[in-house]
Image 1: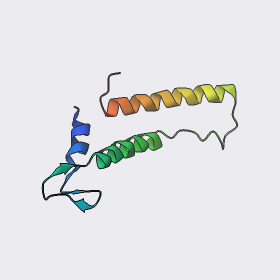
Image 2: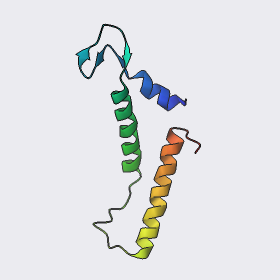
Image 3: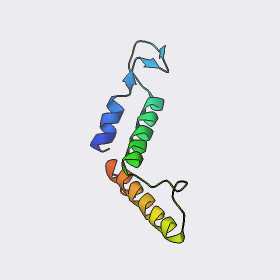
Length: 85
């Protein structure tokens, strides 16, 4: 597991799951972990400054460029979580 995923996972241990006190012991909140990963991916996407296809005229060149940008965003997400697939 890479360091960033460990950092996110460390933030997900709690005595409460979904706001309910479980039994006073620490439990891993899977929903919170998933939310943190999704938030991280959204941040990477927003920081990539993708063009808005609704606001810009769409041509074949734009679609090709947009696809390249999406590929680069996917690569950034993989690098952030050190995924090798």
